[in-house]
Length: 345
Image 1 (cartoon, helix red, strand yellow):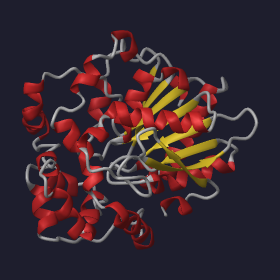
Image 2 (image 1 turned 30 degrees about the vertical axis):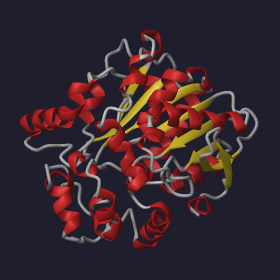
Image 3 (image 1 turned 180 degrees about the horizontal axis):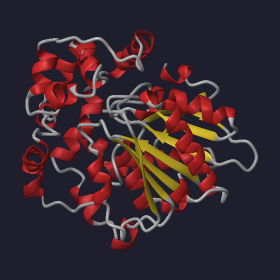
Image 4 (image 1 turned 30 degrees about the horizontal axis):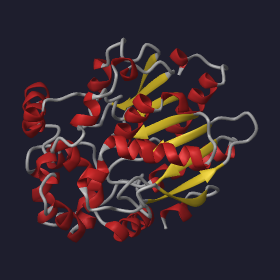
């Protein structure tokens, strides 16, 4: 259903070897133009790229935009093992193969960055460049299994000391077995928190430990921001009515329960380095995925790196700062085409 809202891209399907159905939107590029692979985050779908699909397609760029596992019209398996990053990255690579796309520009937001990071590790030859939005490249572990249980606690303690509040205090709630049922029951409340009317709401109502669960279980409601009007929120709600939050929250559970450790421990050191041109886009009003994280990337991990900050914007630049985001993507394409320099974006 979501793919009906990404004109001019056409909805298509693919089935993985283990029988999982993916849906994606695809619009082919004009001659000699690159194609963008757009990977959404949580709690989103391909629909969150609507403004980028429209603009890029108008300019002749190709776009390929999947509903990732658990989202939209794509299947939503119950087995946590199916949400391992390596498996999901392989799924996306099969979509590129189906469309005979030798190379694409990979763009990802939020949890989509996890998939794009593993695509960079496992399938680097398929990408001419990478853009990580809101979350920087996530270098593979390995994290010792014993540390996974308190990993979010350690981050929360560190961020509370550094910023005066915990940034990932919602993770323990998302790891609870009944979290999906709570979010499904109070979808409108959850939406009004995740797409906040003000940036500061995330400091007080979302990020602190336990705050998100209190908000959603009490069915608290706030008006939506102007950049996410009720008409678009209704489409978002209809998309989520198909599979609900169980699949999307499995991404958190898989990570918090250590299911990616074994795969990531086997990635060769040389595959952890991204040699293609790479841009990290951050915003100064995202109080969860803070901009400071981008500046902690070591040059040895990404030798050809630039960082771009969008001012006055929160976690959703594809929506809140759609025109600036579009311009950044277009300029990056010019870098790949040899018409611009990465440092000039």
